[in-house]
Length: 80
Image 1 (cartoon, one colour):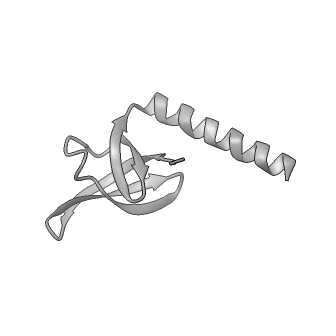
Image 2 (cartoon, helix red, strand yellow; image 1 turned 180 degrees about the vertical axis):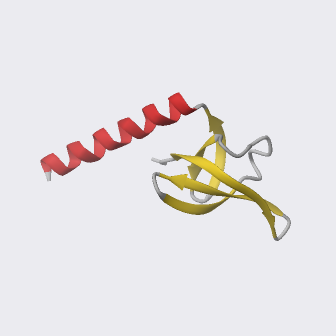
């Protein structure tokens, strides 16, 4: 099973001939390749899998996904 996490694009730039972005994951920023989502803009939400933005999503969908991931993590903590 694969897991992709939504994050907010806070900066876009080119590095080594690749389109890259700084993505905010709730206060933690990571460098992500956005070659697969060339239409991405600062402020967009992207779905990230192993260092690559694989699609864009709207903020409402991103927040709902993050909420569900948190619920799963909270449940796991309860049963552990």
